[in-house]
Amino acid sequence: MKVVIQRVKAAHVSVNGGICGSIDRGLLVFFAVHRDDDINNIEWMAEKIINLRIFPDDNDKMNLSLRDIIGEILVVSQFTLYGTCNKGRRPEFTRSAPPEKAEKIYNEFVEAISKKMGKKVATGRFRANMEVHLINDGPITLELEKL
Image: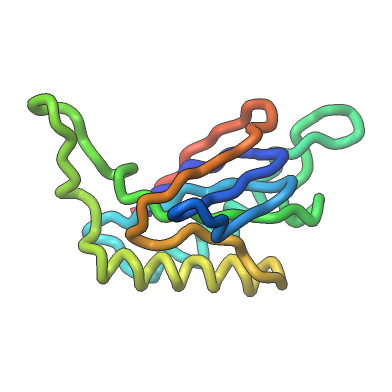
């Protein structure tokens, strides 16, 4: 699985003009499932994300985690993270998991984050055409992958 993490001041995702997930200060996480993934890496990924020290402390040093600042998290499925553009002019997505498998792992990931944070996690809508709005903080953008 692969994630792209953005530190945000606020973010929301909408589908058909209606907001389905919204957060204030925290992390926007774009989440993709590889065709060879299973649920074994969910706990590692969830723990890593909520404990990454990427928020500033009183000395403006990145030393605090999402958990430390009691921040919020918005998880958006994005199979295109496993897209490749090496051949031709159209991306191919053969490395992405099929939708049924990806949705199951995505839901398990959201549940793991929710349990670890002790609160509901905001999400987009799986397989929907979404508009993601954010106020990037930094900007700080990181990528994690665990196969």
